[in-house]
Image 1: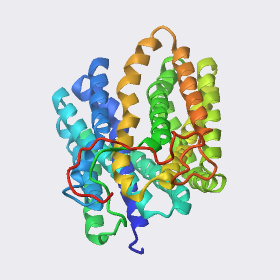
Image 2 (image 1 turned 135 degrees about the vertical axis):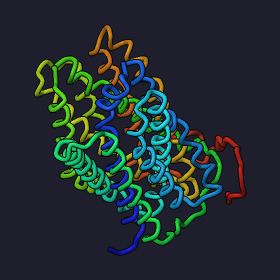
Image 3 (image 1 turned 180 degrees about the vertical axis):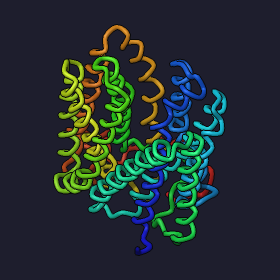
Length: 404
């Protein structure tokens, strides 16, 4: 295989998805069987898991000391170590600590991985490449599920072995990538400061509402399947497998489709679809229709590639790393707030939770209609601030000299 940066991105994505899928698939059973978790402990664990995502903006400070490529591999190694040692600490405090360790690696890796993708892949090929990356992610997750069956069902080994084996395998692949691939150039020198630019306002809002909608899907859609329709563990697992298979088959085509029709049309289609899906969640009374909505919902998230390609077209090249860090934090604002607030609403009206999700999708649709058909620097939105090059809102946390 040729040693190019795109292949490195795909392999890093593969390792991340393989290791994280196993951790996620085993988590609920492990914490209940070995640590006697109740809803209170698992709720706190999930909140702790999201904190590193909320603090993802701090990744830009680490880039003062380490190159982005090395930081991505280091973060990926941290994720693997966190997963590998999870089984050795089946206590409440131990699980909190290993989860935070794993999550720091996961969220820093995702932040830098997105930044490198937008820097290493040409603008006209980014959507297609991201679709391919989603397919690799799905293939890795399916392999992870297969490894669980092999190790725990066929070989009859314990959780500690499953976590240790998959974490060690991921770490070995990271070390291999470190020595196999050279250091690739990123082109423009990246700013090493926290940046909020006024002309990126539309991207920030699209990112925020994307995070809010995703939390409703992640937390409440699956919960509805169990609470309302009585889905068993095997049925939920089958639903996950269907989602990954659909992504494996269709994500590359969706990426190419976005590249052909443009970001405005792609986002418009996504948000109209999500409005219908969320209203469907609120009204559905048949289990098989709910499952169909769940699969469509998961597939529509592949269209969110268009938000990233939109930013790539409007951004200054030097802003990419800093803005990816900030956008990850913006995306996770909802992760800290939405589950707790809507969890209380769920007790009285589950349908209202999904109607709120539809409302978020309507807001996103209105924002998408403001995306130009051909976004570019100076053409970030149809409705602009007074000047296309309006003064910047800059956090002024300068920690080094970077070109302006």
